[in-house]
Length: 255
Ligand SMILES: NC(=O)c1ccc[n+]([C@@H]2O[C@H](COP(=O)([O-])OP(=O)(O)OC[C@H]3O[C@@H](n4cnc5c(N)ncnc54)[C@H](OP(=O)(O)O)[C@@H]3O)[C@@H](O)[C@H]2O)c1
Image (cartoon, rainbow, N blue to C red; front, side, top):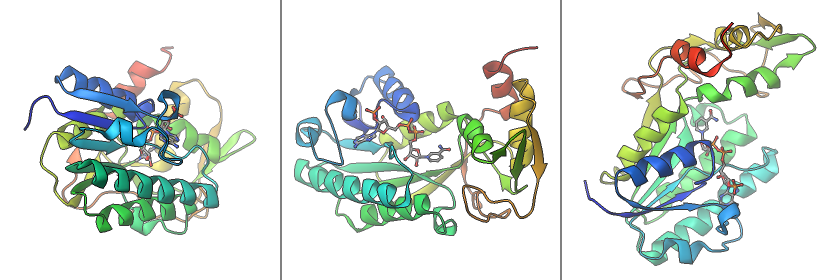
């Protein structure tokens, strides 16, 4: 581990980015929180060379503002190219990107085709890298419910998941950022598996939300079919310690 590195967090104002920036600063590193709101845009290249000057490490936790098939592919391809080219020019020694467990199994979705393109650009770039594939964040559960809501019902497949809290993702990324590049992909998951319908049902119940969750083998997850293998990690994921029940009891109104 090296002390006092200059680390650039692309997407440093986002859910994961904010936590990662704080975590790395607390460990004494010089951290640049880079995003369009601070004048750094990976899609246009604006501010990129200035932000990267003298940086040893870049962590990319940006996300596309639009999840439209075309827009999201354009975002991850163009941003990825601009960023890796700028990193190579600046002599960055480690590129870390946050991707999603199962990306290669979810290519029926435009979002995951874009994440796959992001990963492939990283692997073919000369910059040493570590790709961290995480499972769904606990904070994403409301979005899953919303995406599957029709009136007062939420129809979802009962596929297995192993979601993780965003704080544990940020902590794991901070460890990866100060370690040597692996030139490989690592997986990150929460401490316990849960079925998708149960994940959403518990969240809605804890929030006093009366929508009814109906498990449906034919229901789609963001437009694609998923099974018990689609979203769950392989044999040796790194595990975040926070349990869903504990997060729910701290993050939802107590009745
Ligand atoms: N949601 C999940 O369950 C999940 C699971 C596994 C992996 N992931 C991955 O985690 C990553 C981060 O997700 P998140 O939820 O933390 O994202 P988020 O909260 O939506 O934040 C997105 C960040 O990207 C920045 N950004 C947008 N356009 C940009 C551009 N042109 N140039 C530079 N930065 C730009 C935003 O900056 P501004 O604030 O300035 O707009 C913001 O800081 C994503 O890559 C996602 O694929 C998500």
